[in-house]
Length: 111
Length: 115
Image 1: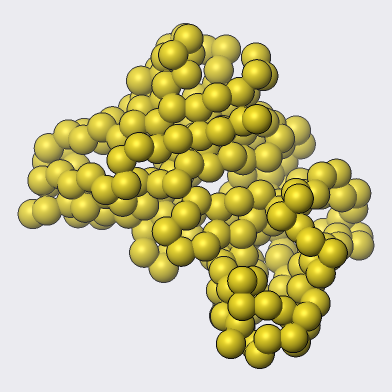
Image 2: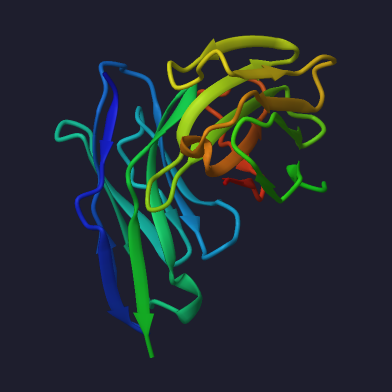
């Protein structure tokens, strides 16, 4: 079975600080993609960042970066210089034709 | 590019009634997915289409649920004889070509409340 686990139901960070959200996954596939999606309150799911499993280099998108450890099946998201607009639910997802989501981490950003 | 749209955005229905939701994907995308999201949880996969062919259905999709994509463009999800446990957000997503390697773009969802 393919699973995605997010062990932090809630996280908080102060504006301009850095926060890391954790994610572990399990799959028997050798070829897959991993994503982080953001879901603001009452708004639709937005893709934040993607990582191809065959690439060793960690993906980076502006203030968002990942730490991808394939052997450990770990895929954490680092948000640098946090902004108030980063407050949302963040979902880690494994893509093997369909998306398998974790239960999410609610991120609060304090001024 | 108008994005993925879903209609209606909200639906309140009484237990036992039938409901139908519509999803219009991004025009050049040939894959269309349906997910269900309950409060405080991540979305769960229901089914997906490549063009008009329904390629996979989750065990979550009971016999009361049916999805179609008749011309490979928009899709409908029908729930017959709704139950209170069907109350959830129903999300539609689309992607291009091989869905494994392409990110899925989500619509705003249809929130269903069964009273």
